[in-house]
Image (cartoon, rainbow, N blue to C red):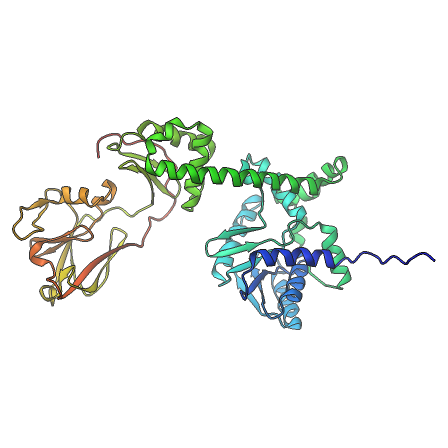
Length: 459
């Protein structure tokens, strides 16, 4: 008698794949948040996660408010979690209304902002193999480089949040089989059929046509994304090595090939949270930077959306958009923090350092912008020093010097915060003092136009 053959289990392989991802990337004891739209994919992911991690799963539903049935979707998600005793958070957001790809991008940006504000430290999303294939095609159609062709990683850091995609190597058929085996219910998002959105167009028009010629298309595109991801890892490792080299000697930049320069600068910008400009602008930055890289006394500025790239004493610096410097003097009560040119100025108590607390008691100071020619006697028996030289010695870049507040008592300059204090106003040893503290708090409103240019001249 022939041995009976059991049908394949549609549940176990998918559960095992999710379990492997969580074992690799979810720290012990940490709560797993799951992005829960109420669609089939997120229902499957939440069901698997709740099975693997009972009591350690929290569902997050982002309510975009864009579709007529958005409230009903939120109600479905809340009821689904209530029935399974899964903690549930509803996050309502406002997405700027636009058509086509503009709406997609705006909704995605708003959604990820909601993720950051949720309080989660690890968040799992239900992207699967078809989503990966769509993302790869989408990015290639926009002219993406290796990083874009790598599409979505299984795990990545986004601010203080780790994003996981445990289903990324799973096909749609596996998710459908799991949902059927578990008798799960879900909601259908009618916007998924709207081909004005680029991803829907790729999903409904482009991918099916390609799949008729290449039956394993989704698998092969996902594999290609993995290959691009490996290449991006190598490029990132090389850029990290180059960053160490160039941080010690930027004058070596012209000796690198242009692709190597571009790879380093992309990495350098991403490390600071700045967007990488288009290729033509990136190459222009490199051309101008290579021209002045070995000239430590040259002033260089290149404006990008987030702010300016500047060269100072042989090192490249990223400076965000800043408010213009103050131009008028004003009275200041040292007991109250104040704003000055985008700085937050306050006095913090200390001992044996900073300004003499006894001399400041009950006094009102004047804040004034730098005019030029100011001097300070920083040693009781020493000569008066020009503020210009003191700023240079303190390594204050030229673009910051006119933004610093100068502290006056009546007509006497007594301190430049973070730089120097007049000898007569310095706190004696072991006596109460006040340390002036400056923190950047305010950026200029709006995006600076991405204009380029080097400002010549000596610093």
